Length: 61
Image (tube, rainbow, N blue to C red; front, side, top):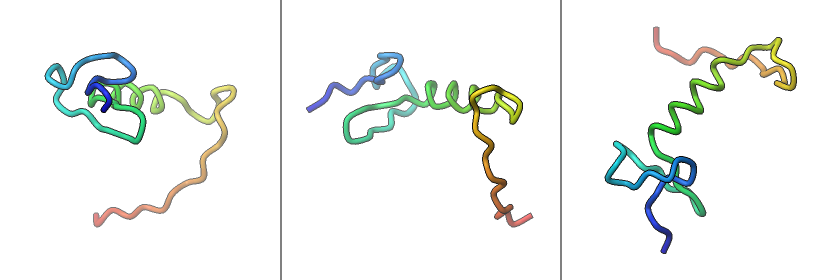
């Protein structure tokens, strides 16, 4: 059994709000937010970032 700590920041389960488990790793809610914010900071002009196709709007608004 793996220790329940974030594989990225090494925080224990009791130190975070949520700890997500994959087959061989854990990631906490704080690292997910950092990763999401990092991805959001890139745009199509960022070198090395491939262009992403536009996804259809599936919201009910």
